[in-house]
Image (tube, rainbow, N blue to C red; front, side, top):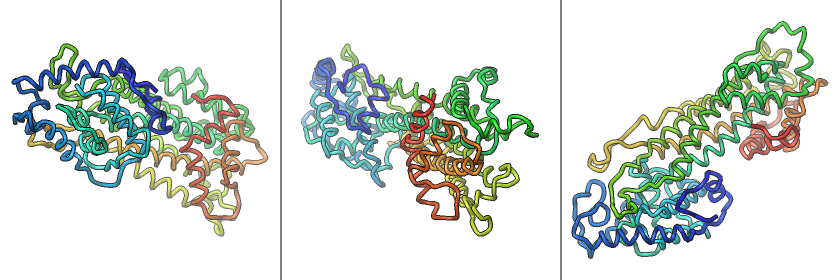
Length: 483
Protein backbone atom coordinates (compact mmCIF):
# COMPACT_ATOMS: atom_id res chain seq x y z
CA UNK A 1 0.00 0.00 0.00
CA UNK A 2 1.26 3.46 -0.90
CA UNK A 3 0.65 6.16 1.71
CA UNK A 4 -0.41 9.43 0.11
CA UNK A 5 -1.23 12.82 1.63
CA UNK A 6 -4.89 12.41 0.62
CA UNK A 7 -5.73 9.75 3.19
CA UNK A 8 -6.74 6.11 3.59
CA UNK A 9 -9.83 3.93 3.33
CA UNK A 10 -11.21 1.82 6.16
CA UNK A 11 -10.40 -1.35 4.24
CA UNK A 12 -6.76 -0.30 3.92
CA UNK A 13 -6.51 0.25 7.67
CA UNK A 14 -8.00 -3.19 8.35
CA UNK A 15 -5.63 -4.80 5.84
CA UNK A 16 -2.57 -3.29 7.52
CA UNK A 17 -3.79 -3.89 11.06
CA UNK A 18 -4.94 -7.48 10.60
CA UNK A 19 -3.35 -8.86 7.46
CA UNK A 20 0.09 -7.30 7.64
CA UNK A 21 -0.15 -5.36 4.37
CA UNK A 22 3.10 -3.49 3.70
CA UNK A 23 3.19 0.28 3.46
CA UNK A 24 5.47 2.78 1.79
CA UNK A 25 5.39 6.55 1.39
CA UNK A 26 4.49 8.07 -1.95
CA UNK A 27 6.72 10.61 -3.63
CA UNK A 28 3.99 13.20 -3.11
CA UNK A 29 4.00 12.57 0.63
CA UNK A 30 7.78 12.88 0.82
CA UNK A 31 7.69 16.18 -1.06
CA UNK A 32 4.85 17.57 1.03
CA UNK A 33 6.62 16.70 4.27
CA UNK A 34 9.89 18.21 3.10
CA UNK A 35 8.22 21.51 2.18
CA UNK A 36 6.42 21.67 5.51
CA UNK A 37 9.60 20.88 7.40
CA UNK A 38 11.33 23.87 5.81
CA UNK A 39 8.74 26.16 7.41
CA UNK A 40 9.35 24.60 10.84
CA UNK A 41 13.11 24.98 10.53
CA UNK A 42 12.67 28.66 9.67
CA UNK A 43 10.41 29.24 12.66
CA UNK A 44 12.77 27.39 14.97
CA UNK A 45 15.56 29.78 13.95
CA UNK A 46 13.42 32.89 14.53
CA UNK A 47 12.97 34.84 17.76
CA UNK A 48 9.16 34.67 17.88
CA UNK A 49 7.95 31.95 20.32
CA UNK A 50 5.93 29.20 18.60
CA UNK A 51 4.07 26.54 20.60
CA UNK A 52 5.73 23.16 20.50
CA UNK A 53 8.70 24.44 18.53
CA UNK A 54 10.30 26.95 20.88
CA UNK A 55 7.98 26.59 23.92
CA UNK A 56 6.97 23.89 26.32
CA UNK A 57 3.75 21.86 26.04
CA UNK A 58 0.29 21.89 27.59
CA UNK A 59 0.36 23.74 30.90
CA UNK A 60 3.98 24.71 30.14
CA UNK A 61 3.10 26.43 26.85
CA UNK A 62 4.37 29.82 28.06
CA UNK A 63 7.83 28.51 28.93
CA UNK A 64 10.44 29.56 26.35
CA UNK A 65 12.97 26.82 25.53
CA UNK A 66 16.60 27.60 24.72
CA UNK A 67 17.58 26.37 21.20
CA UNK A 68 20.28 24.14 22.67
CA UNK A 69 17.60 22.28 24.70
CA UNK A 70 14.96 21.77 22.05
CA UNK A 71 16.04 18.36 20.80
CA UNK A 72 16.19 17.20 24.40
CA UNK A 73 12.72 18.71 24.96
CA UNK A 74 11.24 16.59 22.16
CA UNK A 75 12.75 13.40 23.52
CA UNK A 76 11.71 14.33 27.04
CA UNK A 77 8.16 14.77 25.81
CA UNK A 78 8.09 11.17 24.59
CA UNK A 79 9.60 9.82 27.79
CA UNK A 80 7.34 11.75 30.12
CA UNK A 81 4.18 11.06 28.15
CA UNK A 82 4.82 7.30 27.93
CA UNK A 83 3.10 6.96 31.29
CA UNK A 84 0.40 4.40 30.56
CA UNK A 85 -0.50 1.48 32.77
CA UNK A 86 -2.34 -1.80 32.46
CA UNK A 87 -2.20 -4.75 30.13
CA UNK A 88 -0.99 -4.09 26.57
CA UNK A 89 -3.62 -3.47 23.91
CA UNK A 90 -3.94 -5.86 21.01
CA UNK A 91 -1.22 -5.85 18.30
CA UNK A 92 -3.80 -4.98 15.63
CA UNK A 93 -4.61 -1.79 17.53
CA UNK A 94 -0.93 -0.84 17.72
CA UNK A 95 -0.48 -1.51 14.00
CA UNK A 96 -3.47 0.69 13.21
CA UNK A 97 -2.05 3.46 15.42
CA UNK A 98 1.34 3.31 13.73
CA UNK A 99 -0.20 3.43 10.26
CA UNK A 100 -2.56 6.27 11.07
CA UNK A 101 0.11 8.40 12.73
CA UNK A 102 2.35 7.93 9.71
CA UNK A 103 -0.61 8.92 7.52
CA UNK A 104 -1.02 12.21 9.40
CA UNK A 105 2.70 12.92 9.13
CA UNK A 106 2.37 12.29 5.39
CA UNK A 107 -0.10 15.17 5.07
CA UNK A 108 2.66 17.63 5.93
CA UNK A 109 0.60 19.49 8.53
CA UNK A 110 2.77 18.30 11.42
CA UNK A 111 6.03 19.72 10.07
CA UNK A 112 7.81 16.41 10.69
CA UNK A 113 10.69 15.27 8.49
CA UNK A 114 10.03 12.47 5.98
CA UNK A 115 12.50 10.34 7.93
CA UNK A 116 10.11 10.25 10.88
CA UNK A 117 7.25 8.75 8.86
CA UNK A 118 9.65 6.24 7.31
CA UNK A 119 10.84 5.21 10.78
CA UNK A 120 7.24 4.70 11.92
CA UNK A 121 6.42 2.51 8.94
CA UNK A 122 9.48 0.34 9.64
CA UNK A 123 7.75 -0.71 12.87
CA UNK A 124 5.13 -2.45 10.73
CA UNK A 125 7.69 -4.50 8.81
CA UNK A 126 9.03 -6.65 11.62
CA UNK A 127 8.46 -7.76 15.17
CA UNK A 128 9.34 -4.39 16.70
CA UNK A 129 5.86 -3.29 17.73
CA UNK A 130 6.13 -1.67 21.15
CA UNK A 131 3.74 -2.65 23.95
CA UNK A 132 1.06 0.00 24.48
CA UNK A 133 -0.69 -0.07 27.88
CA UNK A 134 -4.47 0.08 27.95
CA UNK A 135 -4.85 3.06 30.28
CA UNK A 136 -3.47 6.56 29.86
CA UNK A 137 -5.43 8.33 27.13
CA UNK A 138 -8.27 10.75 27.84
CA UNK A 139 -8.94 11.26 24.15
CA UNK A 140 -7.99 14.92 24.11
CA UNK A 141 -4.75 16.36 22.85
CA UNK A 142 -5.13 13.07 21.09
CA UNK A 143 -4.07 9.70 22.46
CA UNK A 144 -0.99 11.15 24.12
CA UNK A 145 0.17 8.28 26.32
CA UNK A 146 -0.50 5.44 23.85
CA UNK A 147 1.22 7.27 21.00
CA UNK A 148 4.15 8.15 23.24
CA UNK A 149 4.60 4.44 23.97
CA UNK A 150 4.66 3.82 20.22
CA UNK A 151 7.25 6.58 19.79
CA UNK A 152 9.59 5.00 22.35
CA UNK A 153 10.38 2.35 19.74
CA UNK A 154 11.91 4.94 17.37
CA UNK A 155 15.68 5.25 17.57
CA UNK A 156 16.33 8.38 15.47
CA UNK A 157 16.92 11.83 17.05
CA UNK A 158 13.88 14.09 17.11
CA UNK A 159 14.03 17.59 15.64
CA UNK A 160 11.94 20.59 16.69
CA UNK A 161 8.21 19.80 16.99
CA UNK A 162 8.62 16.13 16.10
CA UNK A 163 7.93 14.80 19.58
CA UNK A 164 4.63 16.63 19.55
CA UNK A 165 3.89 15.45 16.02
CA UNK A 166 4.23 11.85 17.17
CA UNK A 167 1.74 12.02 20.03
CA UNK A 168 -0.86 14.70 19.32
CA UNK A 169 -3.33 12.59 17.33
CA UNK A 170 -6.53 10.59 17.57
CA UNK A 171 -4.98 7.55 15.94
CA UNK A 172 -5.74 5.05 18.70
CA UNK A 173 -9.39 6.02 18.87
CA UNK A 174 -9.70 6.08 15.11
CA UNK A 175 -7.95 2.75 14.60
CA UNK A 176 -10.22 1.03 17.09
CA UNK A 177 -13.33 2.62 15.57
CA UNK A 178 -12.35 1.44 12.09
CA UNK A 179 -11.77 -2.11 13.34
CA UNK A 180 -15.02 -1.99 15.32
CA UNK A 181 -16.98 -0.88 12.25
CA UNK A 182 -15.66 -3.87 10.31
CA UNK A 183 -16.50 -6.23 13.16
CA UNK A 184 -20.00 -4.88 13.74
CA UNK A 185 -20.85 -5.02 10.03
CA UNK A 186 -19.99 -8.72 10.06
CA UNK A 187 -21.82 -9.39 13.33
CA UNK A 188 -25.00 -7.74 12.08
CA UNK A 189 -25.11 -10.21 9.21
CA UNK A 190 -24.61 -13.00 11.75
CA UNK A 191 -27.43 -11.50 13.83
CA UNK A 192 -29.75 -11.74 10.82
CA UNK A 193 -28.77 -15.39 10.39
CA UNK A 194 -29.44 -16.09 14.07
CA UNK A 195 -32.77 -14.27 13.97
CA UNK A 196 -33.89 -16.21 10.88
CA UNK A 197 -33.00 -19.50 12.57
CA UNK A 198 -35.01 -18.44 15.62
CA UNK A 199 -38.04 -17.34 13.57
CA UNK A 200 -37.99 -20.71 11.89
CA UNK A 201 -37.35 -22.83 14.98
CA UNK A 202 -40.05 -21.01 16.97
CA UNK A 203 -42.63 -21.47 14.21
CA UNK A 204 -42.67 -17.77 13.40
CA UNK A 205 -43.74 -16.20 10.15
CA UNK A 206 -41.73 -14.39 7.50
CA UNK A 207 -44.66 -12.23 6.35
CA UNK A 208 -43.64 -9.05 8.29
CA UNK A 209 -40.35 -9.03 6.39
CA UNK A 210 -42.01 -8.57 2.99
CA UNK A 211 -40.48 -5.72 0.99
CA UNK A 212 -43.75 -3.83 0.50
CA UNK A 213 -44.46 -3.82 4.23
CA UNK A 214 -40.94 -2.80 5.19
CA UNK A 215 -41.04 0.00 2.59
CA UNK A 216 -43.77 1.69 4.61
CA UNK A 217 -40.94 2.84 6.89
CA UNK A 218 -38.02 3.45 4.53
CA UNK A 219 -35.01 3.25 6.80
CA UNK A 220 -32.22 1.72 4.68
CA UNK A 221 -30.87 -0.50 7.44
CA UNK A 222 -34.30 -1.94 8.14
CA UNK A 223 -34.79 -2.75 4.48
CA UNK A 224 -31.42 -4.51 4.32
CA UNK A 225 -32.10 -6.61 7.41
CA UNK A 226 -35.59 -7.56 6.24
CA UNK A 227 -34.23 -8.56 2.83
CA UNK A 228 -31.69 -10.78 4.56
CA UNK A 229 -34.37 -12.46 6.66
CA UNK A 230 -36.53 -13.03 3.60
CA UNK A 231 -33.60 -14.59 1.76
CA UNK A 232 -32.64 -16.75 4.70
CA UNK A 233 -36.15 -18.10 5.22
CA UNK A 234 -36.99 -18.66 1.54
CA UNK A 235 -38.00 -22.24 0.86
CA UNK A 236 -38.43 -23.21 4.51
CA UNK A 237 -40.55 -26.31 4.99
CA UNK A 238 -40.91 -25.39 8.65
CA UNK A 239 -42.35 -21.94 7.89
CA UNK A 240 -44.61 -23.36 5.17
CA UNK A 241 -46.01 -25.98 7.54
CA UNK A 242 -48.00 -23.44 9.57
CA UNK A 243 -48.94 -20.76 7.05
CA UNK A 244 -52.59 -21.75 7.46
CA UNK A 245 -54.44 -22.90 10.54
CA UNK A 246 -52.08 -21.21 13.03
CA UNK A 247 -54.20 -19.40 15.67
CA UNK A 248 -51.48 -16.84 16.34
CA UNK A 249 -51.96 -13.55 14.52
CA UNK A 250 -48.50 -12.12 15.21
CA UNK A 251 -45.11 -13.06 16.60
CA UNK A 252 -43.32 -11.64 19.62
CA UNK A 253 -41.32 -8.46 19.09
CA UNK A 254 -37.95 -10.23 19.32
CA UNK A 255 -38.94 -12.14 16.16
CA UNK A 256 -41.21 -9.74 14.28
CA UNK A 257 -39.16 -6.60 14.95
CA UNK A 258 -35.72 -8.02 14.19
CA UNK A 259 -35.40 -5.91 11.01
CA UNK A 260 -36.28 -2.76 12.92
CA UNK A 261 -33.62 -3.31 15.61
CA UNK A 262 -30.94 -4.84 13.37
CA UNK A 263 -31.72 -2.17 10.79
CA UNK A 264 -31.40 0.71 13.23
CA UNK A 265 -28.05 -0.80 14.21
CA UNK A 266 -27.00 -0.73 10.56
CA UNK A 267 -27.99 2.91 10.24
CA UNK A 268 -26.01 3.79 13.38
CA UNK A 269 -23.07 1.90 11.90
CA UNK A 270 -23.38 3.95 8.70
CA UNK A 271 -23.06 7.12 10.78
CA UNK A 272 -19.97 5.77 12.54
CA UNK A 273 -18.44 4.69 9.23
CA UNK A 274 -18.99 8.18 7.84
CA UNK A 275 -17.26 9.64 10.90
CA UNK A 276 -14.32 7.28 10.43
CA UNK A 277 -14.11 8.09 6.73
CA UNK A 278 -13.87 11.82 7.47
CA UNK A 279 -11.18 11.21 10.07
CA UNK A 280 -9.20 9.11 7.61
CA UNK A 281 -8.77 12.15 5.37
CA UNK A 282 -8.25 14.56 8.27
CA UNK A 283 -5.00 16.09 9.49
CA UNK A 284 -4.75 15.89 13.27
CA UNK A 285 -2.02 17.70 15.18
CA UNK A 286 -1.49 20.83 17.26
CA UNK A 287 -0.12 23.20 16.25
CA UNK A 288 -0.52 22.66 12.51
CA UNK A 289 1.78 23.87 9.77
CA UNK A 290 -0.32 25.16 6.88
CA UNK A 291 0.88 25.45 3.30
CA UNK A 292 1.66 29.17 3.51
CA UNK A 293 4.01 28.57 6.43
CA UNK A 294 1.74 29.67 9.27
CA UNK A 295 1.80 27.62 12.47
CA UNK A 296 -1.60 27.76 14.16
CA UNK A 297 -2.99 26.24 17.34
CA UNK A 298 -6.20 24.33 16.66
CA UNK A 299 -8.56 21.96 18.46
CA UNK A 300 -8.76 19.16 15.89
CA UNK A 301 -7.07 16.74 18.28
CA UNK A 302 -10.24 16.62 20.41
CA UNK A 303 -11.74 13.15 20.17
CA UNK A 304 -15.42 14.08 20.56
CA UNK A 305 -16.53 12.91 17.08
CA UNK A 306 -14.86 9.53 17.59
CA UNK A 307 -16.00 9.20 21.19
CA UNK A 308 -19.61 9.86 20.27
CA UNK A 309 -19.47 7.34 17.43
CA UNK A 310 -17.96 4.64 19.65
CA UNK A 311 -20.50 5.26 22.38
CA UNK A 312 -23.36 5.07 19.89
CA UNK A 313 -22.11 1.73 18.61
CA UNK A 314 -21.81 0.39 22.16
CA UNK A 315 -25.49 1.22 22.70
CA UNK A 316 -26.33 -0.54 19.43
CA UNK A 317 -24.37 -3.63 20.43
CA UNK A 318 -26.21 -3.86 23.74
CA UNK A 319 -29.58 -3.62 21.99
CA UNK A 320 -28.81 -6.27 19.37
CA UNK A 321 -27.41 -8.58 22.06
CA UNK A 322 -30.47 -8.06 24.24
CA UNK A 323 -32.87 -8.99 21.44
CA UNK A 324 -30.80 -12.08 20.61
CA UNK A 325 -30.93 -13.30 24.21
CA UNK A 326 -34.71 -12.85 24.26
CA UNK A 327 -35.06 -15.10 21.22
CA UNK A 328 -32.84 -17.69 22.87
CA UNK A 329 -34.96 -17.64 26.01
CA UNK A 330 -38.18 -18.30 24.06
CA UNK A 331 -36.83 -21.65 22.87
CA UNK A 332 -36.37 -22.87 26.44
CA UNK A 333 -39.80 -22.03 27.85
CA UNK A 334 -42.56 -24.52 27.00
CA UNK A 335 -45.16 -21.77 27.33
CA UNK A 336 -43.58 -19.94 24.38
CA UNK A 337 -41.68 -22.53 22.34
CA UNK A 338 -44.71 -24.08 20.61
CA UNK A 339 -44.20 -27.75 21.29
CA UNK A 340 -40.48 -27.99 22.00
CA UNK A 341 -39.29 -29.84 25.13
CA UNK A 342 -38.35 -27.81 28.24
CA UNK A 343 -34.90 -26.24 27.77
CA UNK A 344 -34.58 -28.34 24.61
CA UNK A 345 -33.51 -31.18 26.90
CA UNK A 346 -33.33 -34.78 25.67
CA UNK A 347 -35.01 -36.14 28.82
CA UNK A 348 -36.24 -33.14 30.83
CA UNK A 349 -35.47 -33.51 34.50
CA UNK A 350 -32.63 -35.92 33.94
CA UNK A 351 -31.19 -33.54 31.36
CA UNK A 352 -31.05 -29.73 31.68
CA UNK A 353 -30.47 -29.08 27.99
CA UNK A 354 -29.45 -25.51 27.21
CA UNK A 355 -30.76 -23.98 30.44
CA UNK A 356 -27.43 -22.57 31.56
CA UNK A 357 -26.33 -21.52 28.07
CA UNK A 358 -29.09 -18.92 28.32
CA UNK A 359 -27.71 -17.84 31.71
CA UNK A 360 -24.38 -17.18 30.01
CA UNK A 361 -26.05 -15.12 27.29
CA UNK A 362 -27.93 -13.15 29.96
CA UNK A 363 -24.69 -12.45 31.83
CA UNK A 364 -23.02 -11.22 28.64
CA UNK A 365 -25.99 -9.00 27.82
CA UNK A 366 -25.81 -7.50 31.28
CA UNK A 367 -22.16 -6.67 30.66
CA UNK A 368 -23.03 -5.13 27.29
CA UNK A 369 -25.57 -2.89 28.98
CA UNK A 370 -22.97 -1.66 31.44
CA UNK A 371 -20.56 -1.05 28.58
CA UNK A 372 -23.25 0.98 26.81
CA UNK A 373 -22.96 3.74 29.42
CA UNK A 374 -21.33 6.54 27.40
CA UNK A 375 -17.73 7.34 28.20
CA UNK A 376 -18.05 10.62 26.32
CA UNK A 377 -20.46 11.95 28.95
CA UNK A 378 -17.53 12.00 31.38
CA UNK A 379 -14.61 14.40 31.53
CA UNK A 380 -11.71 14.73 33.95
CA UNK A 381 -9.79 18.03 33.59
CA UNK A 382 -6.01 17.73 33.28
CA UNK A 383 -2.80 19.67 32.63
CA UNK A 384 -3.37 22.41 35.20
CA UNK A 385 -6.83 23.11 33.71
CA UNK A 386 -5.40 23.81 30.25
CA UNK A 387 -7.12 20.65 29.07
CA UNK A 388 -10.34 21.30 30.96
CA UNK A 389 -12.65 19.20 28.76
CA UNK A 390 -11.64 15.82 27.40
CA UNK A 391 -13.49 13.32 25.21
CA UNK A 392 -12.69 9.96 26.83
CA UNK A 393 -12.71 8.61 23.29
CA UNK A 394 -10.03 6.02 23.93
CA UNK A 395 -12.13 4.58 26.77
CA UNK A 396 -15.21 4.61 24.53
CA UNK A 397 -13.31 2.63 21.89
CA UNK A 398 -11.88 0.16 24.39
CA UNK A 399 -15.26 -0.72 25.87
CA UNK A 400 -16.77 -0.97 22.39
CA UNK A 401 -14.24 -3.64 21.47
CA UNK A 402 -15.16 -5.59 24.60
CA UNK A 403 -18.88 -5.25 23.86
CA UNK A 404 -18.38 -6.56 20.32
CA UNK A 405 -16.62 -9.65 21.66
CA UNK A 406 -19.57 -10.20 24.01
CA UNK A 407 -22.08 -9.80 21.16
CA UNK A 408 -20.37 -12.55 19.16
CA UNK A 409 -20.79 -14.89 22.12
CA UNK A 410 -24.45 -13.96 22.67
CA UNK A 411 -25.19 -14.65 19.00
CA UNK A 412 -23.33 -17.94 19.30
CA UNK A 413 -25.66 -19.05 22.09
CA UNK A 414 -28.62 -18.15 19.91
CA UNK A 415 -27.45 -20.07 16.85
CA UNK A 416 -26.66 -23.13 18.98
CA UNK A 417 -30.10 -22.96 20.57
CA UNK A 418 -31.93 -22.24 17.34
CA UNK A 419 -30.02 -24.96 15.54
CA UNK A 420 -31.19 -27.49 18.11
CA UNK A 421 -34.73 -26.14 17.87
CA UNK A 422 -34.70 -26.53 14.08
CA UNK A 423 -33.50 -30.12 14.42
CA UNK A 424 -36.35 -30.85 16.82
CA UNK A 425 -38.83 -29.78 14.14
CA UNK A 426 -37.83 -32.75 11.96
CA UNK A 427 -39.05 -34.18 9.65
CA UNK A 428 -39.89 -30.62 8.59
CA UNK A 429 -36.94 -29.20 6.65
CA UNK A 430 -35.36 -25.80 7.24
CA UNK A 431 -34.74 -23.25 4.52
CA UNK A 432 -31.53 -23.66 2.48
CA UNK A 433 -30.07 -20.57 4.20
CA UNK A 434 -30.84 -21.49 7.79
CA UNK A 435 -30.05 -25.12 7.03
CA UNK A 436 -26.58 -24.08 5.87
CA UNK A 437 -26.02 -22.31 9.18
CA UNK A 438 -27.17 -25.38 11.11
CA UNK A 439 -24.94 -27.61 8.98
CA UNK A 440 -21.94 -25.35 9.61
CA UNK A 441 -22.46 -25.83 13.34
CA UNK A 442 -22.61 -29.58 12.97
CA UNK A 443 -19.52 -29.68 10.74
CA UNK A 444 -17.58 -27.67 13.33
CA UNK A 445 -18.41 -30.12 16.09
CA UNK A 446 -21.49 -28.53 17.64
CA UNK A 447 -23.79 -31.54 17.87
CA UNK A 448 -27.57 -31.56 17.70
CA UNK A 449 -30.15 -32.76 20.23
CA UNK A 450 -29.19 -35.53 22.63
CA UNK A 451 -28.36 -36.31 26.25
CA UNK A 452 -26.51 -33.65 28.21
CA UNK A 453 -22.85 -33.18 27.41
CA UNK A 454 -20.27 -30.52 28.18
CA UNK A 455 -21.75 -27.35 26.71
CA UNK A 456 -18.88 -24.85 27.01
CA UNK A 457 -16.67 -26.32 24.24
CA UNK A 458 -19.57 -26.27 21.79
CA UNK A 459 -20.40 -22.68 22.64
CA UNK A 460 -16.74 -21.78 22.08
CA UNK A 461 -16.81 -23.45 18.66
CA UNK A 462 -19.97 -21.55 17.75
CA UNK A 463 -18.51 -18.27 18.97
CA UNK A 464 -15.53 -18.80 16.69
CA UNK A 465 -17.84 -19.45 13.73
CA UNK A 466 -19.68 -16.21 14.48
CA UNK A 467 -16.65 -14.02 15.25
CA UNK A 468 -14.65 -15.14 12.22
CA UNK A 469 -17.61 -14.84 9.86
CA UNK A 470 -17.50 -18.55 9.01
CA UNK A 471 -21.19 -19.12 9.67
CA UNK A 472 -22.19 -16.22 7.42
CA UNK A 473 -19.84 -17.45 4.69
CA UNK A 474 -21.45 -20.90 4.88
CA UNK A 475 -24.87 -19.31 4.44
CA UNK A 476 -23.75 -17.07 1.59
CA UNK A 477 -22.34 -20.06 -0.28
CA UNK A 478 -25.89 -21.39 -0.30
CA UNK A 479 -28.05 -18.29 -0.85
CA UNK A 480 -25.66 -15.61 -2.16
CA UNK A 481 -24.31 -12.46 -0.48
CA UNK A 482 -26.24 -10.96 2.42
CA UNK A 483 -26.67 -7.22 2.74
